[in-house]
Picture (cartoon, rainbow, N blue to C red):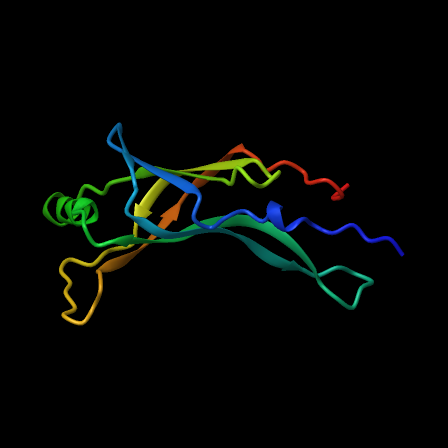
Length: 157
């Protein structure tokens, strides 16, 4: 039996990515990012169906959440939190993430996350035993746009 398998070179490197955040019309290169993950979870309801033992499932909404780990070397999140504390005005922003490994035939994928909002954040931090400081930022988003999609690899179809 002849099986087609993925080529190792087509695995996308975890280190070759770009991330930009747009806050109040200013676009920042988040070169201090270490890790990023965003998820979209569908909200489903169970549907009873006459004549069937099992219930069906129907999507009725969705929710976007994410986390980003960054080096602890910028005050951007703390400024947003202080603004909210002092004025009650919350900050919404966009995040754009691209993955592209020139060795992989997968090409480039870019996703734009809209109406992002941080859940909170670290105000101060130190660790006398640490080699470096980082922080995890949890956020929600209300919409995403797949601006570029990965190529279909040979053998997938």
